[in-house]
Structure formats: structure tokens, C-alpha cells
Length: 344
Image 1 (cartoon, rainbow, N blue to C red):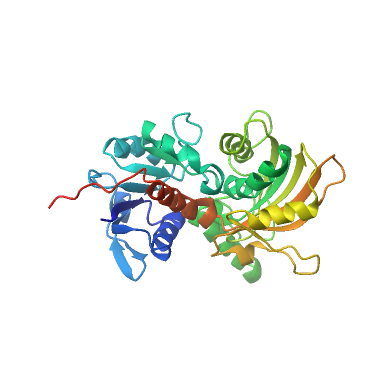
Image 2 (spheres, rainbow, N blue to C red; image 1 turned 180 degrees about the horizontal axis):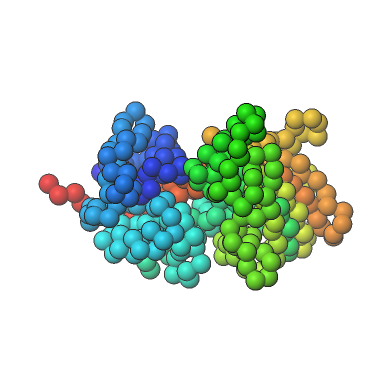
């Protein structure tokens, strides 16, 4: 018997990607339901070679649903995830609503799959921030090998991280530049076309943005609370794919060759690191791929036991939809979730 899966927020970028990945990975679902707000009811979305009609989240009966992949935003998740969990479905939430709740596991399967068993406290599992997900996939094997003390990361985040509106704004502004039309800025605080913006999410009292704070808090919760991390998060005019320049300080010595070999063997990592023009991965090449790509591995001679590297991943997949579905697969593979008995 297969599972019944609901995708909440099915008309958004991540929701559509979730439906694609469920089909690609042949997820053991007997039934998949597409849900969104009332204004999207009746909209067609694709699930493999099938077309699903979107139904309203607000009045859906979750009593026979096994897994709800929630990508409808933080406010919707705060309201609906506990209600859905109370009906016996496991909610895997892509928003920031539950990531810092001590009773909700925050999971990247390649990093802390064992923590997934904690879902029973609220029937909710949190998906990390897109920039954190790819970072900890790269950090985990290195931490196991030489113990990370400190990380300095600068991100180069695509506009799809801000949703469809962000992608539309980059497209419209780029077109406006070439046609000498009026350039309208609404989604981002400054123009994004042919520009970079060192500001993602709201500013906090200490001068960091909420996005930067998320990377610190989530890395500690997922990987190790002892790791010190500082981040600068930047929006760049790229449609899909987040990139990160990462400097790491270790407790123990680790050579470039040792690090490269550790990463090559690590789940979810793909090392492409040739010291020649084009011997690295860019966000363009990561789009549509599942791996976290790692390039430019080199010694950081400014600290003892230091390395620097470049890390790229598709933020809609590993940073969101793929990671959520991997969490669902983890529940099934560990026999933590059985399909509900369907009524005859």
C-alpha cells in the first residue's frame, strides 16, 4: 500500500518542483493532492504526465493523508501545520515557521537523519533555509574529519529564493534595460538587474539580516552548536542556483587533498575542482540538478588549519523541494511512518 501525499502551496515555484520531484523519484504515493489558497482552486498543475486540479487548503480533510509537504509560507504554516498534524499527517514544512522550535526536528538527511524520529512530538518536521541546506551538506563530512571551529560564508543567492515575484522582477527589469523602458522596483529594495543587493530578509538590531541569522542558528541546530559562523547574504541577478564562498577553520589539520577526498565520498556532494578555466561549477550548471557541487578547494593560509571552497546548488531542489521529499523518504526507509488504512 502506498502513501497519500498532499502538496500545500502547489502553485508556487517550490510546490511545482515538489510535484516534479515526487514523480522523478517514483515516490511510493498512491495518491497526490495539490492544495493552495481558494483563489487558486481549479488551477491545473503537473504531476509527471498527469494533471492535477488544485483544491482549497482551507477546507481539506487531512484525516486520510499520510504526508503533507507544506510550501505555502510561514503564516499559513503557523496556522495549518498543527491542525494537519493533529489529524495524523506528518507535515514537512519548507517555511521558517517551525525551524527554531525545540520540539520540531530541523533535518537535512545527509547531515542529521537520526534526528527525524523527533517528529512525533508535533507531527511536524522543518526544512532548513535554502542557503543553509547546501552549506551543511558540504560542512558535515569536513566536520567529521577535522572538527570545524569557525565558518565565514558569503552567499550569492538567486532571485528564485524570493519566489515567482522575484524571478518576474529580474526578467522585467532586464527587459526594461534593453528596451530603454521604465524600470520598476517592487520586490527587492533596489534594482536587481545587472546589480547585487547585500540585503535578504529584514535587518536586525546587530546589523545582520534575518537571512544571515538563519544560517547561524540553523547550522548550529543541524550540525553542531559549538560551530561559530558569520554570514553575509547577497541577492544576485541569477534565476536559479545559490552559490557560496566558504572559509573554514578546523581544530585539526586537514590538507586540500584530504578534504577533496572526504567530500568526494560524502552523500549529496559532487566535487568538480580543476584548477583551470571552467574547472568549477556555476549556478547555471546546478539548475535542475540534485547535488551540492563543490569547487575551488584551497588552503586558507590566514588561519591555522584553514580551507576555502566554493559551493553551488539548485535552491529550489536541494534548498527546498528535494530536501523535503528526502525527509519523507527517510521516514519511510526508517519505517517510522506506515500508510494509513484506507477506507474500503
